[in-house]
Image: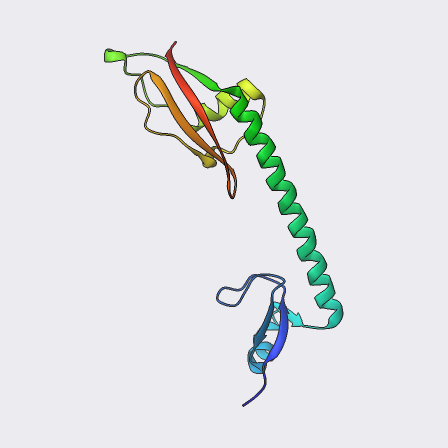
Length: 152
């Protein structure tokens, strides 16, 4: 049986690994596909050092992003309650609904911070009242804010 070859991936390859991973593959797969397509390179001591340095830089960058998200969470939770004014219809029902873009606009007006609307989870808001929204800022960092819907 032929021995396996160690390679460092240059790109993410499904079912094999992510960029920078050290993988062992069959020699034919390495020689005929991965290396000619520049998807991987042979694992040498120098390349392994470069990969390790890149991983450390990425880890530092992720720690910095997490710290920024924690600071942003604290500042969002200090605001307390966001007020969104909507036009009323019958039975204190609002025209339309409150969308995530409405919440983003209210946050920007109150704090001046940019928040990605795709990370906001709000309940269905059709009436006046106070509701709670969750804003996902990072992997495990989420802020809880109150939204107060009032008549305009």
